Every structure is written in structure tokens, then in C-alpha cells.
Amino acid sequence: MSKSTLESLPNELLLIIFSYLSSFDLCQAFLCLNNARIQHLLTSICHSFNVNLMHYDQLHLWLNSNQNHRNRFTNLINTVVFNDSYASRTLLEYWEKTFNGTDQFNVLFPSIKRLIMLQAEYCSYYCIQPILIPLVFSNNTLQYLHLIFKEPAWYYSRILSKLIVHRISVHTMILEVEQGMLSNIFSK
Image (cartoon, rainbow, N blue to C red; front, side, top):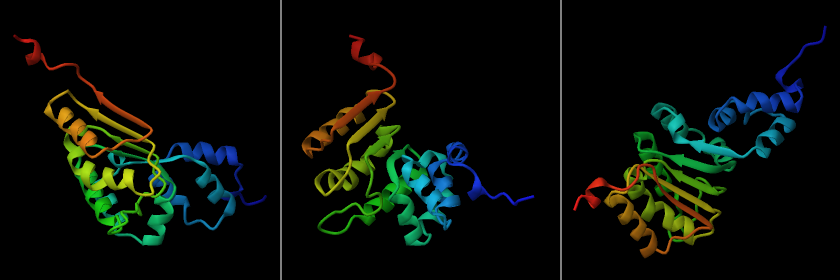
């Protein structure tokens, strides 16, 4: 009887197994394998980095991990999702520090195409000046920005005016409001 290993599984089964893991868990588990076929499968998948799916301790360990391993993972990321969480704020602050001085080149997520911010009224303040401006005006790959607000409070108009003032524009920009108009606007 021959010995079966994970590497001997067909690509179709490996992709099914991969679909059950977050991009972070997938890369943590398989990125260091010395197997060209698995490496090729990993690089052929669109990866997203959803901070909501990570525990703060996991994020902290990853941020302090081997830079080469971290870079191999972040080079694969094309979508980053933030929300109003301590982990999101920590990653945003870390990301801001990684921009190279004067040229403002994005070294943490060099392949980012999509940036999604849930509860944007809370985390966009941390993002617009330090992250979006360098992303838009340096050698960037950002094509899609999606800001999701809970309601159209003053944060919405403030962030919209900051986007306009700083001339932040990407191919697709969506500013979404989950709950309709404020009731006190129509109370008169």
C-alpha cells in the first residue's frame, strides 16, 4: 500500500480544502511548504485580508513575525477589509508606519486592488490622510474603495469632503449607507 500525502492530492481537492480557510490561515499553513505545485495554487487564488476574522493576539504575532514570511503573504493580498476594532486600528497604524518616507511607497500591501472599510465612520479617520493619500498618489495598485457607514451622520459628509479636498479618486469608489436618512432631518 502506498503512502498518501497532502501534496499527492489533485489540484481540485486542494482548492476545495483551501476554500475552507481564510487567506491568512491558508498562507500560514501552506506558504512555507517547499512544493512548487502548491505554491502555484496559492498564487493563483485571489486573497483577501479580513482583519475581522483575526484575533488581536494573532495579528500581533503576525506583525512581529519574520518579515520575509510576512512579505510573501502580503504580496498575495489584493483585498483588505477593515472594521471598527482594535485589531483594525492596530493594523492601520502599523501600515501607516510602513510607508517609505518621501516616496510613500506601499510596502505592506503592494498588490492591494480593493480596500473595504466596514463601519467607516469609526475607522476612516485613521485611514484617509495616512493611508489613502499615499495609496492614491504614489505608485499604487488600488482600484476599488468601498466605505460602508452605518447611517448618514456627520462622519459621512466629513469623510466625503476629505476625499474631495485631498483629491482621492480611484476607478471605483462606493460610499454606502446601511440605514437610510436621519429622521431629525425631516422633523420640521
